[in-house]
Image 1 (cartoon, rainbow, N blue to C red):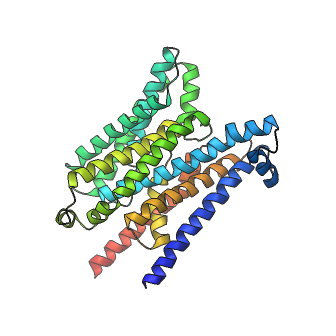
Image 2 (cartoon, rainbow, N blue to C red):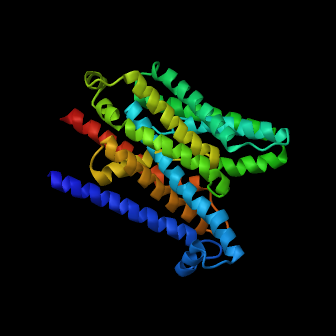
Image 3 (cartoon, rainbow, N blue to C red):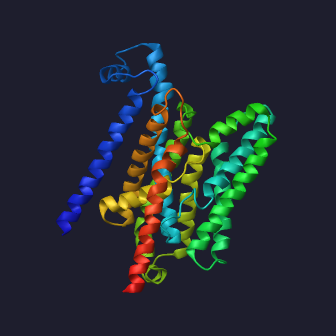
Length: 344
């Protein structure tokens, strides 16, 4: 049995790594002007000095592919942390309004700096998004002590998201026309505007947050078995909860700051990964969720670019098409389990 589980996990990681690499290369090759494999290799290795190909690859496609990979993984890990924290399978940064809170504060920052003839820095965008995420998360936590069950908490999170979106739309309505165009494109969710300068802060934030999440894997595993068990195992619940909140908020804030709000990835991918690996152990699921989110978002971004080319869809449109049915299936499965439990 242990041998079968080990082989399943090795096979799962191998599958995700192969898919991630293949989709990453396809994202570099495909576009308005496709690059053959040999041409791509020549440009990457410096054998082909064509300045136009270098600009297409290194200024446009490579930063976008790296961003989709890293930010997709970040969203998935954020979703797993929130699901573990709230013990609810459909908890996620988009559903709980955390992404909407980050969206609101980033929109306010973008409008404020543009009116003074400045542009928002990467650190400023992340800081604003992190503040918005924490405010939205704080509101959800306050409500969690008032509501009777997790279903009501999810509804409350959705309402917080609607409020934040409404305020954002109100702010955009009174912004300058040039700002409205930029904010509208960003608020739809897309990796298209991410350039090389944005990669360094993305890599730093996602790497640090992922390492922090892995370090929390063992106490999260104890927390999954109940608060009493975790306390008896020596877990500091206050520190663990604070760590989960900060890391999930930072990951979702990083995504929102650079790519805008992206839906359903944080809910759907952790469940797909758990089904693939046949376990919920955080030490396995955290890195697997990262790879799964990278695969999911890289594939969705490629579809967003290619389906109706030259017209490009927002990546949130594609993630919703594939992610929403998974969430519906999760809810139906949970209802079936509850009915089975009551009948038993």
